[in-house]
Length: 105
Image 1 (cartoon, rainbow, N blue to C red):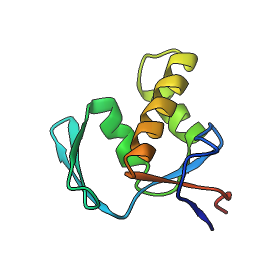
Image 2 (image 1 turned 30 degrees about the vertical axis):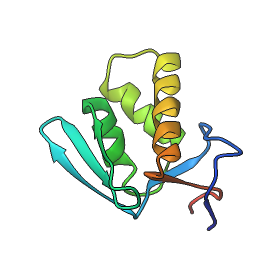
Image 3 (image 1 turned 90 degrees about the horizontal axis):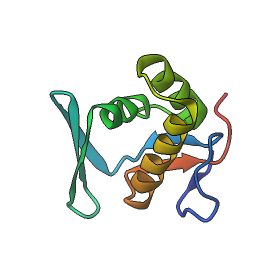
Image 4 (image 1 turned 60 degrees about the vertical axis):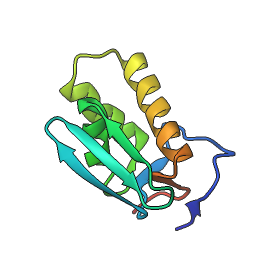
């Protein structure tokens, strides 16, 4: 399995995402704090972002993340997918997640 190290192709609903190894995170109530070990910067995720963070501790497709969030929160399909992709792109840009380019069997 090859790990994508740049974002030229972007993250799509078919992308497989996993949390990067060069970080540590902890739950703070409904939120999550993440420390990048590469740049020493702390990041904070709200309750929905924290739920997504827990989901990506193992490789998972964006479609699976979206479907889980749709089941658990009152949000439209379009808004849910758009918000998840935006969050994952930001996390990818900050090197907090990796995008795998093959399907997990």
